[in-house]
Image 1 (cartoon, one colour):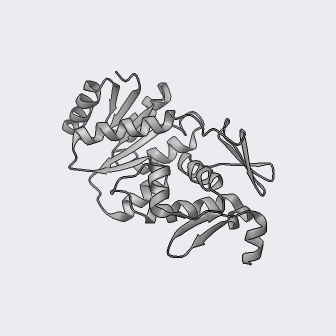
Image 2 (cartoon, rainbow, N blue to C red):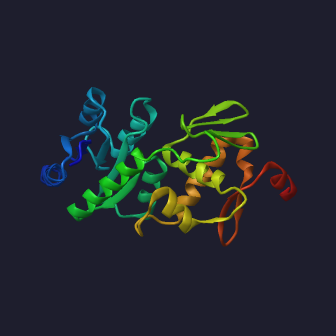
Image 3 (cartoon, rainbow, N blue to C red):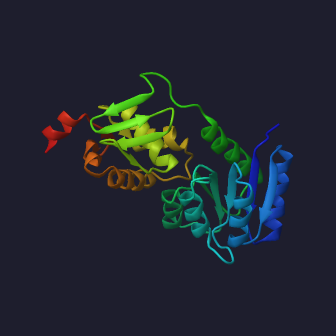
Length: 237
């Protein structure tokens, strides 16, 4: 049985009760909140392993709650699944780009939600990739697998968990083109609900955070992305 703690945040009591019931049945320890401020208060008292978060909440929106979770040092690695009636692609992309681990729309299957919760938690608890030493270097970029730390020219870079996983995968497969489908499968363990455009959004944000080193990530038109060694990137200019 699972031992992780899940916080369910939704202002619709029927949905909260439904989600809490199925998660508790699966063995998770479940707490609930009905507003954005109540969710942040609950997280402050005891950070959960994962939050199932509605977007349309009283007090603070789900986006605001998510931003705060990713800003705080003690909650930046908490799993977040957005569960919302907003079905537009723009909302999905905004949520995933802000750092959500998954996005599920209402109406939804409680059984599917439980499976997605398990998938996100497995990713969170997965050990760092082995092989090639603890620190992987590509030009000025250094990735410390053990510490989950990225530096550029010795300066730390603040990445979300998804951005870190994306960069690590590209670095481990440096010089090889990775399609959007491959990246979705490996980084997000994605299902059809996550669109390929999500990869483009995260690559754009990752390049910005890496500064000049972001130029090492090459767009291969019609295929996907590749992380190049500095000398190859220089030849492309």
